[in-house]
Length: 429
Image (tube, rainbow, N blue to C red; front, side, top):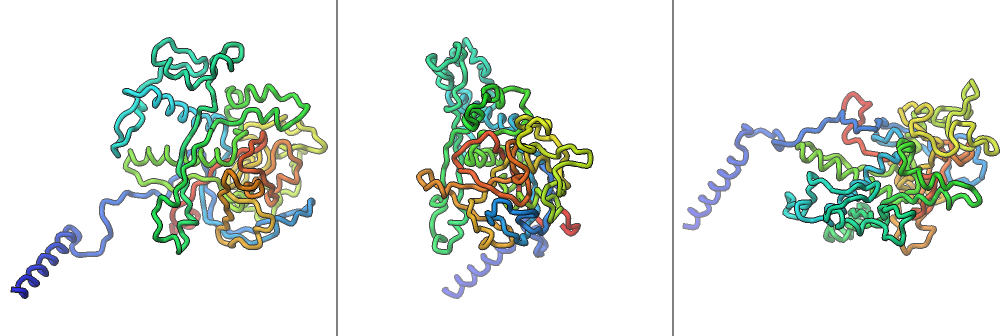
């Protein structure tokens, strides 16, 4: 009897294996019905930066004698990068998404629906009865959105303005480096997930705060909101706000790709300081500036970037403050304003001698500072120099820092998206 039962089990097991292999002719042909991946994907507004090697560090004199950007040969894998700094209009898309999300939740009813996972989701097909520019709406629905606006006591000349402090965005930050530690292998995923909820509206007061005894109020009133500055780089954003923007951009595109039954992309993010420097050089390994150099003027005497010429002839380069994000010639990778206009946040934590211990392959020195950490732990590398900086800070190998919770009128950012697969510049991809 026992022998018969063992034989029966063996037969059933064989039949199960056979059924599983049906349609494959018994051959090893891989999992079927997989989503296809197009390696020639080129995200809108981005350019491809091929894999390569370069010498990081100063290409000219270290005039400050800081010795914090020593020479080191670095290998970088290919990626996509925004051809310009993120503009006011692009960042406004993020702001309007957050604004409308909050409005739909306040309105409730048909503005919400059951999502595919059974959880409540926003019904984006429902219109919102509100003129956001004037705060005008005579319907009961419009009155439900009053909490999003300044109270009467805080209105200037009675104008009903949206209160930017109400625009909060929540996203999840996964701590990959902690999760990779061997001692943490049995811990649940949730122990490495950190939810962040931050205010995402740019700090418009930076134009006044950054410059004492200087009249910059028109920039505060108009720079982020007026269409004249739509294609100018967004400023007044913290390092955390930039990361929130990247998380939203990733979610937005992957949601769309999922609807189209396409494979998801990796995550948009800030570049590391070495990815940024590699991209800025545009293949000109030892040149001091993105356009080559060694000069900051062309043969006709025209300035090649937006910065502070001489002792402060700000208008000489064509821009008193920032300029259109596509001003001047791009570098050989097609990237605009990798020197000047606005300095740019990177993901890298600032440490004077980090170059001495980071890996030479895809170096990444990171520290996710907490709110109550000491200020020195909140320093993040910024690159590229800005409209108010002298030419030294425009050099590809020059780095500086700013505190991650600070906002400045001369710091913006651009996003990077990793390339998935063998480098596009290799025909064997």
